[in-house]
Length: 360
Image (cartoon, rainbow, N blue to C red; front, side, top):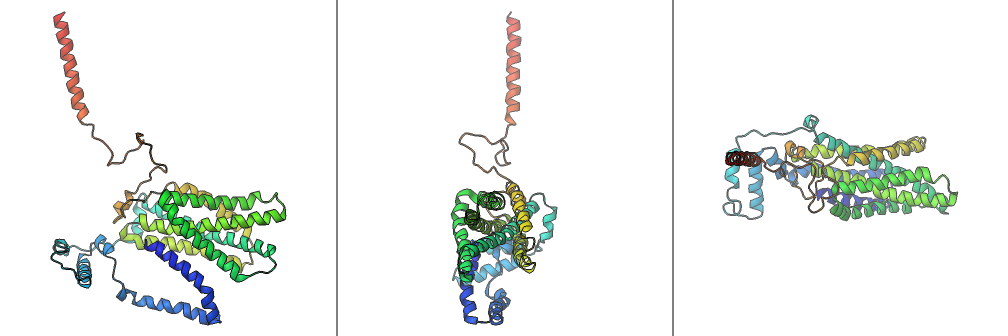
């Protein structure tokens, strides 16, 4: 939820940026105005408390006790009646040493590191190919339009990004996290491949119109892929290393965005190859997404073993009365009683046979 709220706040800042730039009138003043709010982050550790979930997961029970008492005091709660039994249990465990986990511990896991790597590649591809679609759309619109308006292009891209965030919420709620990510990645791959390959046999006017349409679809889906990768990582990464996992995915997204100014510095040389490489990455990501687990309607993992238990489920739900081929440990049934019943039935049949022989 916090990740989704942060993405919408980012969209709000993107819409307010041109107005702020018009008020500042100078890029140096604008840069100073943008940097000033970052200074407030130095005081965040005083304003915002530490995550109680993370403190409990890392067994920092003394800090957890202080935070619970602080919350109860601010909310005017009675510690004896409202949280009866919690504080005494924490006092028993205060002597235990905290167990902070580094993100490097993911390397020794079996499934968790693969999930994080897949989401890193997805965020890199989503934000990297987004610039290709944006450049293609602005280039064809400049040919089709009489005048080129910077603000129209800017607000068009911001509107597409906002629409993708709004559409992502119901899609993820209906198809799940993995299904929604797969759908948006397939749309991105189709828009990219159609724009690169199937438009060469058309006339220039038709080609420009279809290229703009595919660019809009590609920008819509690629932005959803990048945002959903960050949102997905926040759910499948355990609490003890959630900050590190999110940092890796966000760093990959930032590297994907960095490809845009790099291409501008090279005067768009190698732009077609840049688009082809990211189009191939989308095809690889489609296969890798199928290896991810589904986190919808599941509890957030607290430690690394909990994250390892997030295994890959079938993409489509089972039909009523259909038994899955691979059962989880919780679904395995106990068939030990069959051996005893089989032995009893064998003994009864032997006695019956013996009696029959005696009667004959």
